[in-house]
Structure formats: structure tokens, C-alpha cells
Length: 184
Image (cartoon, rainbow, N blue to C red; front, side, top):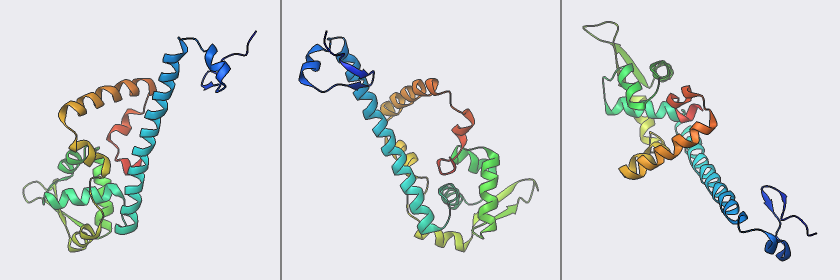
């Protein structure tokens, strides 16, 4: 009786004699394991690129990646409100409000009450915020949103469908969908 072809389900033996004993049914399983390992490596590279960008933002700008993105949105749309900022960043309104509070405390933005409706706030970048934006590494929205926006529509559609299939297996915290990557 020969040795089994596998020590463990995920660790194939490499000896030439045991390789001959691997049935033809094992080849698709081996290809599947190799494919899932390649995809895992790709996710690691994506996460590392995002993390590296946020570290560069912190080092060069002195604020977090989500704060930089919010500051850039406010500069691009002077007078935008909290709701508009939340929509532009695809985050919860409370998260946008917290970002604005932090940026205001740092003297980077001003929140001015609206003339007609005192409940509304208009946001404006202050001179210190403009200086910070000039020295901050880009893209302000982050490398992943920038890369995703550069993909063609059919690639994005496939990616969305495939990631949804993955998410169905992970049982994720759905609230994380509207949390800036820099805060995860």
C-alpha cells in the first residue's frame, strides 16, 4: 500500500512517486487551491497599497486619510453641507460630522451656519487647510477609490458581482460598508 497523496487536504506531497498517484480528480482541487492562494495574495497587495497610502498621508499631511479626503471634497465644493459631504464620500452622515468637527478643531475648515436655515452648515476650507492639501500626497480620496474609478464599466460590474459572492461567505458587518477605509 502506497503513501497517501496528501499529508493534509491543503498540502500536496512533492515527491515524484506520490505525484504519480494523485488521481485526475485531484488536479482541479489543486488548481482551485492555487487560484485561491493567488487571489489571497492579490488582496494582500491591495490592503498593503491602501495602508501604505494612509501612512504616507499621516506622515506628510499630519491628518488621517479620511480627513484628507473630506478636506479635498470641501475644497472642490465650497459651501457643501454635512449631507453633501457624506454623499460625496459615501459615508454615514454622523461620520462626516465627526470628520468636520476634527477638521474644524484643527483650524482647517470653517462651518458657517446658513442664512435661511440655521440648522444647515456650509463648509469652507481655511488657508491652513489649503496649505495642507498642497503638501499632502494624492490621491486625496485614497488609492483604492481612485483605482476603482479608473476601471471600465464592465470590469467594475464583474468585480462587484464577484465581491458580492465573496461577502456572502464572510458574513460581514454591513455597517463597515459606509466607513472610510482609513478608519477600518
